[in-house]
Image 1 (cartoon, rainbow, N blue to C red):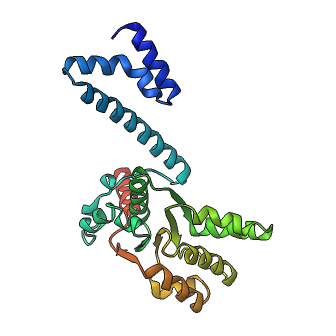
Image 2: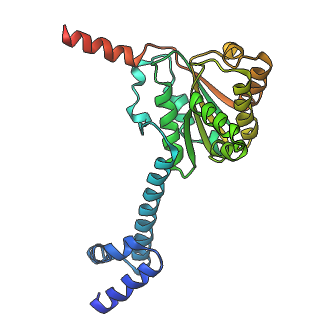
Image 3: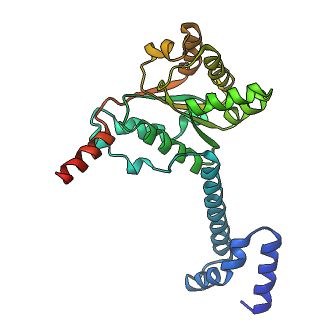
Length: 253
């Protein structure tokens, strides 16, 4: 490939918004020569390389915007520590069919069993697949909605929680809500109903949600919309955090 042709291709790639091609043209051309690629195979190589770079860039940008607390995957999850949890069920959720169907997922269980880890792993998978994701705790979501409501910007702030394909609401049930706060949660769940997926974690059974939301009627209305299309996964094993704490104490002893 002559220097003149190389320069012309690089300039064209830059104008077309293909920076990866512009920077790796020589390397790709050498690979094509070494493998005796046809013109079509070389074109396929160039396009696949550019798509891979763009997908990775989009994925990383999506992770930044998601506000996820970490980026752990299912490969990092120790299923052997939770023998009652069926790995096939979680891996089936990781196919993201529930996201495509605008369905929900509820992960229930006591503190420390890995509910947030699984929720984040599913969210990371969704982000990698090109879906938009946003993570919040229930307490933070309610606090931000109340603040927006106080200055007349509730409708605008609601969009933060309505816009993403997947909304992760962590720690449902850790703090009881007042009725006005529960109504804000109802607005989010109701407006997302059959329009986007909600993935939540809770340390409370659904029968206890009346106490969590301070109103049995509101709790029932929230559950009615949430559970209509929902996979419920119970994780009732031992606590990872307690396991790690006990191991640390044994090492000290």
